[in-house]
Length: 123
Length: 135
Image 1 (cartoon, rainbow over the protein chains, first blue to last red):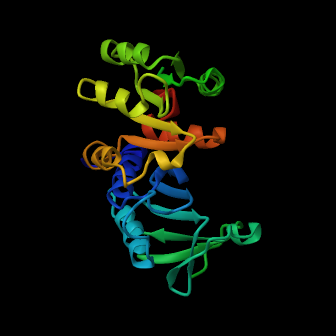
Image 2 (cartoon, each protein chain N blue to C red):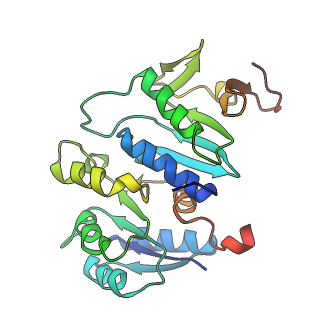
């Protein structure tokens, strides 16, 4: 299937999540004109043999970025933070102020951007 | 207008889902009995999405899913108050996960849920109620 619209993109994301045994009940996925937002808790389904590790989180995000039509991926995970060039587990919900800063994966620029509420992106 | 069938043995949940999604412009059918839902899902062709509770008396959401899935591959949103319903230690869940969920047409939502999450899940599965108007 070649994703053409937001519905196809969401479906592709769910396929990726299922492939990685991610508990979709704890995650919300949204795509608006190819701008993807992931909210909630990124964790594997109950009873999965192995836990999620940072390289796998990176791989999941990379696979989503490669979906045709996906322009950008924003993550608002409660249990993972992107810090110092890598993913770090964060079991506590991020403080409100911190949640406003979210990292963005821009497949065109192949860079991670941080976009605060004022919309000014900084590397 | 897109039609959604919500199946749950809890009347309050059915009413909540019906009222919330109706306000968003969806046409919502409800069934408190999974056998009645099975009849609808195997005979009607105007249902775009099924929201299935997992734990129901007589027939579980998983059983209902397997019963209509070969004839009707509409997207499905599973609803449960028990996250452990999706446990990889269960052969039934593993088999469904690998064989049925892999095409990306199913999603999961845990009770209690925020209406915003319900709207996101439904829109992510079938899009807005009035696709043409929204485009």
